[in-house]
Image 1 (cartoon, one colour):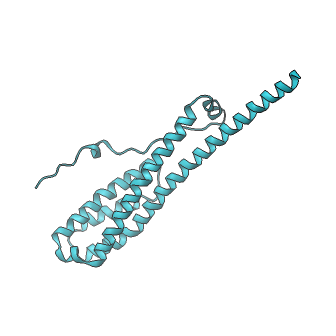
Image 2 (tube, rainbow, N blue to C red):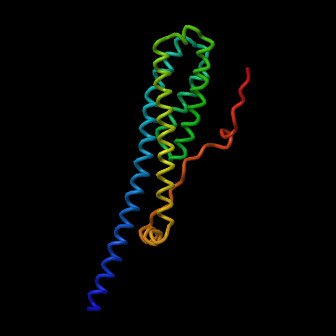
Image 3 (tube, rainbow, N blue to C red):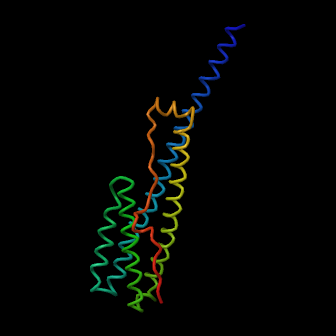
Length: 181
């Protein structure tokens, strides 16, 4: 009788450890999937930018510096660590703001249907990037909590589950923008 009790207790422990391991694997895969969603949106933006640049070039031939900044930042999105890609993404956001500011100087550009459509698509993409970043950080948080909580931290240590880093914004971008009229 005691042997059966010991076997039952061991079986419960083994099943519990398997469930904890599977939970960690599931969360780790969600982290990877949520970063892939950011990648999808950055790729969409990457594909839209040449169309935007060509549209603006037709109206603002002497604004090459701004356009070149966008192109250089766009090229940085394709490779690198997640944090490096997010930094390139932040550079693109700043450069795109400059392009949209150009529209104020060129009334014909501001009224151009291609420009307006591209601007709308980029705004939608920016919202999707922001949502994807939030989802990624939430998923990383959930994974790290599970990874660091007892008793799953024992399993995480045994099977080398690494801590994931949250996406952050540079210190300079945390300041409240100054709005003047």
